[in-house]
Image (cartoon, rainbow over all chains, first blue to last red; front, side):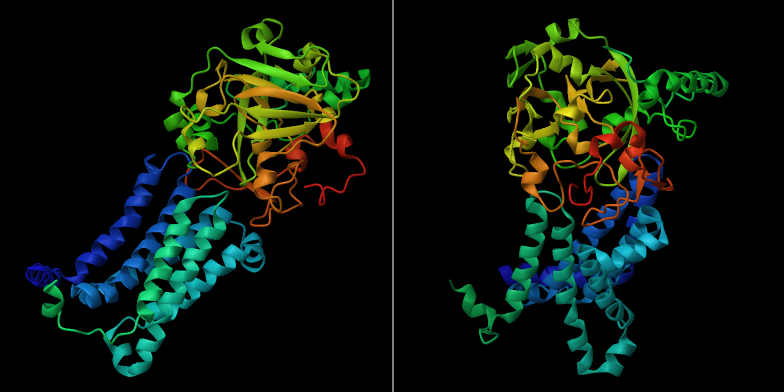
Length: 209
Length: 300
């Protein structure tokens, strides 16, 4: 029964083209900008946009990391969406950085000082720098050229997302649950990755229970 | 005693510039009468106008109602502010519960247009209404042994829903040195823009210490205690490495996580320019003498 649903979902996934994701992905920052200009982001649209892009970027990155365990444990195959999600996440994180630099801090000397002096900014920046080559190599040509090295390179996503989670905790003031939940999810996903792979029993058998 | 200090920031829209340049000359005259410390600073008046009422009331930190900047405006309506009294105790001659209306009947409410600088490096200009804290302390009669003033915010988690979260150690507490508390700039504010204090901004009565970061200006005060020991303060208890007892606005001493050299005025939209932060938030002339000989980097 569960298999039927998963197969149907997988068929549906294949039907949804990735350009749809790119379109929705690009629409979000445009919408934020529009909302900011029309009062939809409150009286401090700069911070609102900066925080929204950072958080949604982290969420999409976590969605990227969910693809593998979903396939492994539920047979739901979202692989055809993963590249689009990854590129969109990078795009958001890059915009998050640009809004911080251009609209928030503004002053170049202060940007430079922050990049050297503030641990939470350094951690966030490292995460962005790690994501950069991953975004650049998110195409078929790179996969072909890099071969097995491509997989190795793209496993760096785990590190980048973990650093993103740490960055979120470090920038918060006082105690809040939310940033810790994100980091816990990321750590959980890394732990799943480390789970031994031998239980590759056919799903029919496991269904009997 | 009211009117010991005169606003150096103005409602640009209601005060023609020429009128206020005249006043500036009057002030210069006052300087000769020994009122120099109270005379307004020469700069900044012309280029600063009060932040819009809607901005002041929709964007602020009041963690008793949540951690978002819009949470106070969303949730503060639950707060009941009548009846309200302030317990004044410790080293005072006349300790007791002072009903707010009894206090107000003995005070002259005046307008004070102050810069407001948040430790998070954003700022506003707020036209407060209120009276000097010193006048309230005089009602209770401060004893000569007192050196500090401790303040406490209402603790009522049913109405202040943020108090159900362990974000801070509730109730919120703050403190001032007695000379800071007695300074004519230190205000007990009961309103903004001539209206009763909005609940999200600390109704019915809050402290305003314009040369210190905003979190020192404790809201919805229910207790004032005179003491001879430096009282604990909420943010210092929570993150001592980032928030000190003094927390004077100082562009030269960075917060560990960001620079304090500049600030973003709120209300200017996407392209609001940062402005330089002023020493003691622009009140250096008035308050610098309080900290003479003190290492402000150590006493952050």
